[in-house]
Length: 58
Image (cartoon, rainbow, N blue to C red):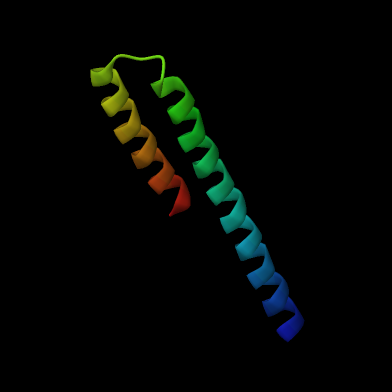
């Protein structure tokens, strides 16, 4: 039974790392696009990306 529990915990960790990688990629994408936008639009985009990243993480 402990083998299944260990495999399940490893799967959960892998899923968490994948979700974290997507969130970091989204933040990086926002940073790149931020440089080419107007200041008002930059703030709105950053807020939206942070909200989306927090939803992806949990």
